[in-house]
Image (tube, rainbow, N blue to C red; front, side, top):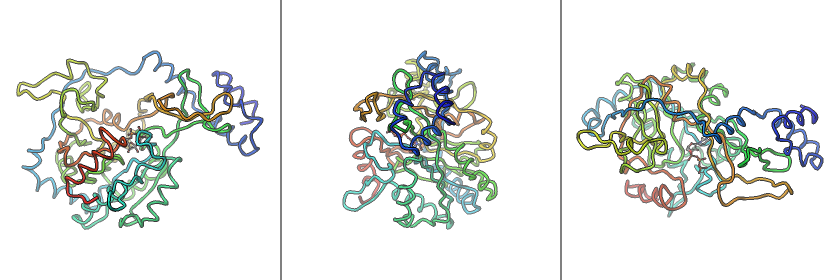
Length: 410
Ligand code: UTP
């Protein structure tokens, strides 16, 4: 794309300011900016206008969905474990670590997985997760292929970190990195931001982007070639979670469901967590802010909350179904976050408060595309220690405490 074409493309959508510093750029910078403009997807601007007009997709008919409870799991423990371990030994299971996020709330400029959660020794979040997975590998006697999603912002540093640390004892042949796509950020008026004079501000396009990027990287072919039937998709920031958990796998396989989701019992009606329920008869995750007061407080005859099971971003998907799902587009969410930008005078502004909107698809929306989903209850004290913030709720402090309570020396 040349300058005149770029200008015409931008002017048509009132985004001409992106070329404001063009004359001051080097040849390479000019070329790179024109490339970025060429790739710009203006569909996102329509999503933003719809969002401003509050035209986000409304929910269908919602109904509660029960879970396989901890007690029921305990009663069938051996059966579930052995079905899950069999699947792992037969090479039918892979795991997908979503590590493309920016972790802005944590406030570190490094990938979240590199954060040192140790107190008396270095223990990164990545190492914690690999140790959790190694427990299963040791039990099964075979490695689980691990696919790690990064973004262009943290790919190199993440790969180097694994390399330098010798994959924390994991077999590197079983580790595959792939990079997710980016999306531009806009300000309150819908103007696309610059992060440098010659660079549009972009950020990873949400954890729902994992599947498209996975397929584009050729990994769906690998999965099909190696006959991997299940993928356990999990977040980087829950340091206590079990990965490729044989019991979760076994229970899901034996249930005949095509997907599974680990859930925790809500601490109280008001807890701000997405709940797994039914929407128009299909599994669906509804965010706490999408629930009416009636739904939040609704109780079953035994007194338990009707919408009682919160998701913890640990899912099982059947790979043959995922390949079919490629036909569907996931809903694009608009999220309010902090984004550094270049103002009209060419100064770099680093905001203290959310100032911009990013565009993200979410892995939780993939659940609604499934025919069914097994809700598998886990004890939050044993399996849910999210690291979102430096201090306070869901923080490094709370995660450290939970790790120590579970016997991990920090
Ligand atoms: P969060 O929703 O907590 O987002 O991600 P984040 O970017 O890590 O953190 P904040 O909101 O900026 O503080 C949940 C999981 O999804 C991954 C994250 O790495 C984390 O494992 N994720 C999120 C991606 O892989 N890509 C994304 O684009 C967004």
